[in-house]
Length: 378
Image 1 (spheres, rainbow, N blue to C red):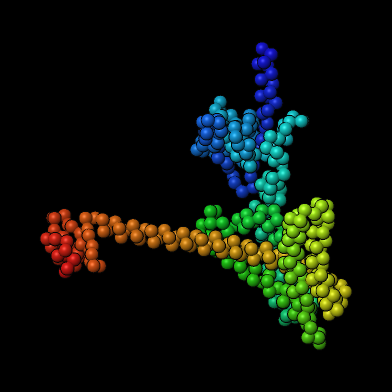
Image 2 (image 1 turned 30 degrees about the horizontal axis):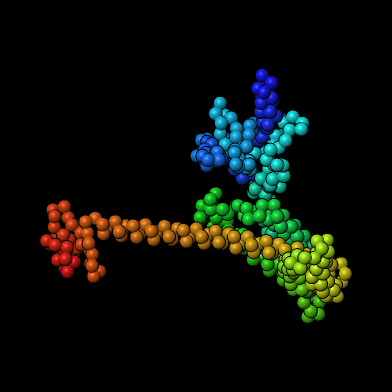
């Protein structure tokens, strides 16, 4: 009896409540549990049994044997498996209850930022800021009064839009471009979404030039504002730091000294280019405008990198889909050709013949022949 009570209490303590949750899906597959290795008893998820809507509460009774990323739940008296990435530790658990999957609350797909960037809202905000910046740039070149306002509005809009792009990519990685995923919207739906995205990226890449022209409008100096040294420093600082880290590790340097030298190398390599650009921009524009343009330039470079990565990802996915469709069309055409030839027909020397229902042979030109060779000769 004592052993039974101990087993029951252990089972009770090991059962945790979770909420089915994700930032993209509206339901999750609940699967049968199968044994992948009979010798060790290792379990895995089998075929899907049913779907469960987001927001439902489940009780995880145990981890699947050999797979800590899968949990077992009981539904209608039967045991099923579910992936832990779709489970959020419930606040209804008693105090002190352990989250057996680690800290699920720290996972991106359960965070408010993950859910925010999985919605259309942030991308609509980014689009509005880009449209506003484009409008002020176009109007700023036509009217001097608007130009003065555009000098503040354009960098402000670009700064906010760029920071949101960087934030989205930092939060979701390549999933930040879900809004043109062919899995969700098909080929043409993705293509129509990719076109305005490419237009915005083109404007973003050229915006620094337009803004520079507005800043220098009416000035006699032919000097150009500086951004290239910053771009070079941003491109060099991280690879240089990694080279130093791995190089010093290979030389068996003290870990503390290695960390200090790598951090110093990072900031020195970054700072050289930034200071060069800052010095020149202040000389041309003055302190306030020069500092503002330099800060905007740093954000512009980082956001441009993210935008270019996005364009490459989107275009690659679309091109890949085109290649898949093309391969499918070629495959169907080849299968049809083989099917046409296999219907009792034969071919040689570029000719094709097939047998008709009356036992004769034809070549498609209306004639009827006794043998396939005769049909192909004619």
